[in-house]
Amino acid sequence: MGSTTHDRDAALSAAPGNYDFVVVANRLPLDRIEDPDGEVSWRRSPGGLVTALQPVMQKADGAWVGWTGAPGPAPEPFDEAGMRLVAVSLTAEDVRDYYEGFSNDTLWPLYHDVIAPPRFRRAWWDAYVRVNRRFAQAAAEQAGEGAVVWVQDYQLQLVPGILRAGRPDLRIGFFNHIPFPGYEIFAQLPWRRQIVEGLLGADLVGFQRQGDATNFLRACRRAAGLTTRGSLVRVPRSWRRDISANSVGRARTSRAAADDDRTVRAATFPISIDSEGFEAIARRPEVKARAAEIRQALGHPKTLLLGVDRLDYTKGIAHRLKAYGELLADGRLTSPEDVLVLVASPSRERVEQYRRLRDEVEVTVARINGEFGEVGSAPVHYLHHSYPQEEMAALYLAADVMLVTSLRDGMNLVAKEYVACRYDESGALVLSEFTGAADELGGAFLVNPHDISGLKDAIARAARISPAEARRRMRTMRKRVREYDVSRWADTFLDALHGGPVAAEPEPQMQV
Ligand code: G6P
Image (cartoon, rainbow, N blue to C red):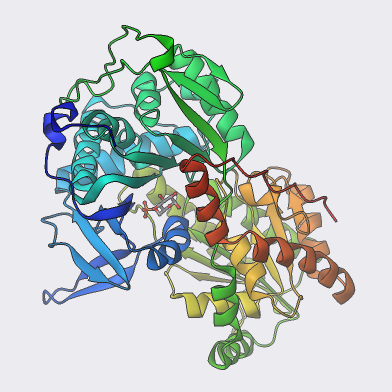
């Protein structure tokens, strides 16, 4: 598509590959697990991104470029679960500085409204640049002439810019799975301009919520001095980056004629799940039997409350426990009749903030159990594990009330998974208004998790909801989750990337 080899950046000069569609994400959909005897197995990777993209990729004949989740040399590209998987290797130092450092100790807290203080370290930034270049190189090797490359999430924000410079023939999309912060927060980042310029290598930059897209457009104006009109950003075509390791994003400022400019679109595409697939799992007889077994193991509670998160400080787990503990103290909930199952899957365990959070959560759980438990019954069942989808579906089926109390969350797919599994239209969802899902799931009990009294009232109401009200609320939520599923999300994004109109966003539902 109009490019010649000499247009390409020398660093990405490998011959084009064979794939028309390439997804680039920090993680492959499967993690490589090596046991102490050296036995290697593959396990589904954590987080919402994989949940959403795996079914999309299985339908498309494409390649997925990502990391295996373990340091060291990468295996050769291989086919698994109907996908071509291309592993990028990260050394132990890359994992420390690019993944744990810049991605999860700088960008993650910064983009989640500094709930935890972000740390800015120049060595981490250098690693981020270096590793983003490696992902871009791997993607360029897989992508055929004129291919579509879809880059995912905050770990890889420089990849669109590097690809654009080296492979101008590609059509490049970027989707940010997490929030994009307001400019006053984003502006703290010493490398804010380079990040904006990296993203603007894409033709289309997608966000979960309108506020995220608006924040990004403002960052384009303020950090990169560009003009925007509506959802469009005008980018001088003469931007050529010297993408040597130390200066990614150092754009030359000379301007080409205006008619040579590129336009980049920033728009909203709320992500979803494979709703039908989830419901089908929940309908399996063995999953239903497992749900009954879970309730039996808990002594047939009157109300089973459930929380499912990665153990992350953005999820408001401490707020949830505080509200639950006070409800028990007030006698508005009672043990053993009411019980909370808290699934907190291990996450980013070498990052200090995550270690501290684990200690805090575990102390609080122990305190509640110590205070309100009896021999043979605990008011909180805390599970620091990850579970396969079947076990998750059984837990969702078993739970009367689902608690999602994030302080900030791009979307929160757990809320949608719960709704998808409740095919009998029972169950209630308590949902933080600071999640992307709150825009769509007005049938939930929407809460501000910082308002502990309000949160307690919502939990108490959800726990004592009448079957008729539960049905009314669940029905509206199920309609939304079934209509706007993950394939619709991907189709809408990819259509827009091909120049189609951006479909109108789903109308926010009124709160019931
Ligand atoms: C969130 C992010 C993903 C990330 C996932 C799991 O969903 O948006 O990009 O993969 O968390 O986190 P981890 O650090 O384990 O990949």
